[in-house]
Image 1 (cartoon, rainbow, N blue to C red):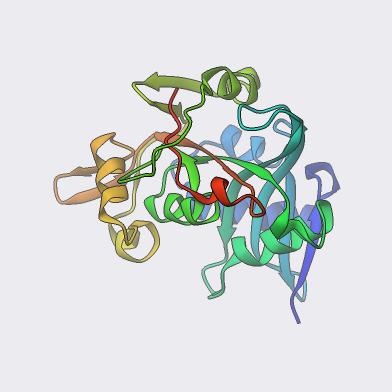
Image 2: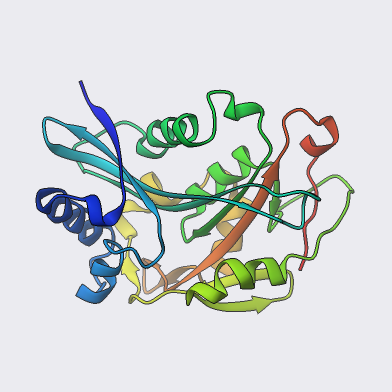
Length: 247
């Protein structure tokens, strides 16, 4: 049976580090060694959740928890940072859902589904963003139709949470982008299965903003990502309505 283990980067064994490096290179083949090593360091203070079977790392997810004052609530609340999710090519299950539920139960509460929470993630994949919007129905940027509601100013919140950590940010209209430090990756063969969202509006948004780039019959994961920010309060009916959140 597979097991789930939580590690800080400095707690990883050499065998685990080598397996994680291979997973990183699978997803980011154009990334240099410095980029790979940063993902195995304490630079961003993420918890690394490993899904293992007989010593083999089937997948890994990066999460981080803070209790912060946010634009969405008057008091400090849980803020969940969703980092990278990596999967061994031979594993068919969902790594992020398996590790995410485990992480939330262990670090927040067994009743985490009814807790208020804010989610943050740097996303370059339409399908991943689609999953994010299902978990946080009140999200920024908000694509497509939405219910009228309150608007929140979150530019300073994003600057404080990402900009101060060295992430290069670009604000454009109602959106915030992160400029990434790797060259465009050819994802043509993986587009339909791993990248493309079911919601065409999401795909169009990513293409329009050149997060995903079509060029000469090839498709690239470009060196830019959207910073997604959302909140949820399952016990408050009004929070279940879609709210347009703008900078």
